[in-house]
Every structure is written in structure tokens, then in C-alpha cells.
Amino acid sequence: WYSRLFVCFSGVCGGEFSVLRSPQWVAFRDGSWPIPGERIPDVAALTMGFSVEEDLPWPGLAVGDLFHRPQATVLVTVKGVDKLPVKGFSYPIENAVPFSLDSVANAIHTLFSEETVASLLRVYMVGKANAVFEDLSVTLRQLRNRLFQDSSILTSLPLSSLSRNNEVDLLFLSELQVLHDIASLLSRHKHLARDHSPDLYSLELSGLEEIGKRYGEDSQQFKDASQILVDSLQKFADEMFNLYGGNAVVEVVAVKEFNSPLSRKTRSILQASQSTKENPYNLAYPYNYDYSVIFNIVLWMMIGLALAVIVISYNLWNMDPGYDSIIYRMTNQKIRMD
Image (cartoon, rainbow, N blue to C red):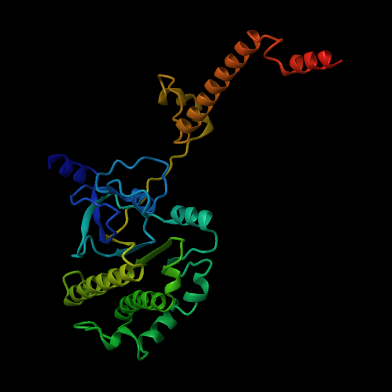
């Protein structure tokens, strides 16, 4: 407990990583282990069965079933709040820096070509998803018009202290409308959730942050919006989980404000003489994660070739030409026949 508390304070924990729904073969452990913000994409990659460049020494994710992988991963980033009272496993985020799931999307695209659904709030989609999500509202005008249609969430959502006439409130409600429309579109095109290619959804919601800036975090509007968001996220998680037959991982990242990523320091050529002080022990450069694989392939291939040469040379050296060589046996038979 003391070590976790120390890591959390020393790493400046800000935000929370929550797993709302996950299949039984993706094992998340109940605990308060902080996860580095820059490693959240690696968690998404590992849960989908992809490898990562660096090992993830995070005890929150256990080794699951290698023969069963989730059919979809849904990651929703909520800005403007450190944590949300959602159901599931929750872990503090250490050093909440901006992250991207581009590496995971590229891995899926490489393996499954054009059969992948990759959806962002900015509507980044490829392959079969284009025809399905092309009617999804994306611009502010489209979102506003969608809210005032008969089938919008305003007909069933309790607004409490929120107003339909306020632009900030409408921005927040429009993001919830996008969540509803994504689940609704998938329910009408269930073949996308039944194919063999995994799907990736990454959405970023900033409407709650704007409500906090407009009314204040202690206002009734912010409290009502937070509760509405929690209920909407839980409903969205259940819908996506059921659409994929219980084979989907739904995660939420709540962060009040992203920290500035570490910047790379530049150095002038005139300071080249100081480079020797940075490595006074003349240590070798660090190897990448492919080094051990290539080393084992080359090593055992050389050992196998060396053993093969030794065995072949030994048999050739001790070979009796009169009995072991087919050339001499066929020659002797020909002479006898003549």
C-alpha cells in the first residue's frame, strides 16, 4: 500500500482508467495499481492479442486466453473530470499525457486489410465501415439538427438543470447522441460485429469539460451532466458488449487535463564535446525487442548447420565405396552382366 501511494504521488497521478465491460478471457485484476498514461495504447493492444515493443510491467492486466481474443475494443476518453463513478475495474493514471491508438489501428489494418471498423469522434473509418457510418453526424450543424429530430436522445433523456437553448449544453448532449447513434447503426448492421476481423473504436468527449468551464465544477449543471454522462456511458458499454456477443472490451479514460508530454532537448554541434560525459563508462547502445528473436534464430541455425556438416563429413570419411556407394554397386552389376 505504501509503495502504491508513493508511486502515485511521485508520478503525479491525474485521471482514471476504467474497464466497464470485458469478456471472461480478458483478465483484469481488481486493485489500485497506477498505469502510465503513455502505456494505455499498449493495454488496448495486449487485450486484442497484439505484441508491443516494450514489456508492460503492470499487474492490472493478467495473462488471458491465447486462443480467444476480443472482437472489439472501445475506448472513450472523457475530458474535464478526474474520475467517474462507473461500474467495473478502475485504476489511477500516472502522468496523464495525450495518447493515440494509431499503432493499434495500423496493426489491425495490416493484418485484416479493409475489413476493419476504426471509428473516432472525428469519424475516421476504413473499409466496410464507410458505408455504415457515412450518415453519422459529425459537424456542429449536423449534431444540432440531429438533436432536434424525433428519434434523438432529448425525447427520453432527463435534462435536469441542462438547457436545450444553451450551446455548451447542446455540445455535451450532441456527444451523447453520437454514442447512441453508433450503437444504433451497429444494431442495424450486425454483420460487422460478426465477421472475423476485430474492430476498434476510439472516441474523445470534451462536452463535460466545457460545462465545467461555463458553470463551474461545483454547479448543479456540472453534477447533473456528470451523472447523465455516467449513465450514458454505462448504457453504451452494455449495448456494445451485447452487440458483439459478450466479446468486447469497453474502457473509459477520465482525465481533467492532459499533462504536457516530455519534449526532446536539442543540442548544438558546438556541445559535442560534452557527449562523452553523458556516457562515461562507454556502455553499449540499448537493443530493441527484436534482438533476442534474431539472436536465437541465427544461433540455432548455425548450430544446426555445424552439426549437419559434422555428421555428413563423418559418414563420407567412413564410407566403404564398395558397399555404401550406389555408383560402385551399379558398376559392379554391369560388369558381371557383361
